[in-house]
Amino acid sequence: MIIVLKPGISRKEEALVLKEIKKLGYRPHVMRGVERTVVGAIGDERTHNTLEALTVMPGVESVMPVQKRYKLVSREAHKGNSTIDVRGNIIGGKKVQIMAGPCSVESEKQLLTTAHAVKKAGATILRGGAFKPRTSPYEFQGLGEKGLKLLAKARKETGLAIITELLSEQQAEMVAEYADILQIGARNAQNFQLLIAAAKTGKPVMLKRGLSMRIDEWLLAGEYVLANENANLMFCERGIRTFETYTRNTLDLSTIPIIKKESHCPIVIDPSQGAGRADLVVAMCKGAVAMGADALIIEVHPNPAEALSDAAQQLSLEGFAKLMEELKPFIAAAGRE
Ligand code: PEP
Ligand code: MN
Image 1: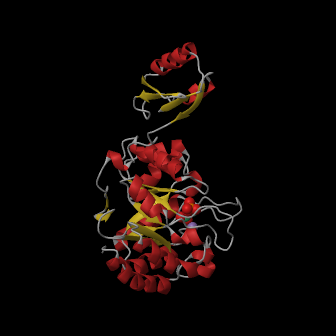
Image 2 (image 1 turned 135 degrees about the vertical axis):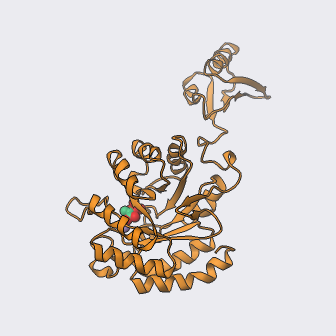
Image 3 (image 1 turned 180 degrees about the vertical axis):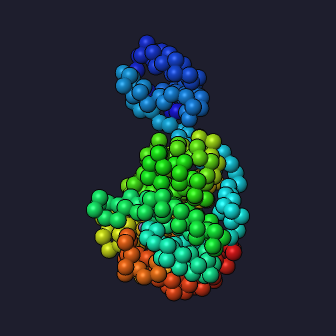
């Protein structure tokens, strides 16, 4: 941390500031300029107390951190790219993994039809919500454990791995029994107890970006997973709230190079929640792949018009097969498979 002292600070006040810095576990290094004095507080800001409280001391003008607050998720902690093995499918490796399936698991027929179709088109992971975080309590809330059982059945029939969301700490063990990846939804992205419970199951965790979450907050939320002995974390950008209403959210593709720069964890793009419109999904997928996304998660439904949730943004089975064909040159151009 850098502590900038006010011009004209007395030696007595300065001594009090230095004493406080030492008390908080840092070594002060005083740099005297012509007009003012700056103190470098030497110590690990991520493990020591913050010195921000020093701003209330007379004589202190400002306190500036020099280190980032996240540690285990940061690129500095791990120079290479982390990879996550999900039933033999490597996320964060050369292959762009495609997760696809309905927004919600609605019935056996709906799920199995979708699972077989997305598998045939080249997806490796099946998505589908059994516990749904709906904005209104009167909307379809998901099939619960019955939905998880259907996902497990679909995995058995197709060999696809399963990703599904959990909404509460109490569900962590149960969802982890069925799922291969635990999804933390946008609405729970800073539910730290949930993140800890998910991490502790030992299953890979996909952390969506919150609706109004800054990138540093997202990285810090991810830190909860790694700090709880679970190295298998992936981030998922799914669009943020902006002033724009043409799209449901604003899909922030800048997070791909940013997460790659700041973190070693894989980045997944969700163009379905991001755009909220099926007609934009193909273009957003192409952009995401070209920019280096490690995986895509795409909503697909056998009859989108009848979907019980997110009808406007789900691709039909044919639409998904066409997308997979159209993506091929973009995947190759990005040097991926
Ligand atoms: C979903 O994947 O269907 C979903 C609810 O996602 P999000 O948490 O990003 O809104
Ligand atoms: Mn959805």
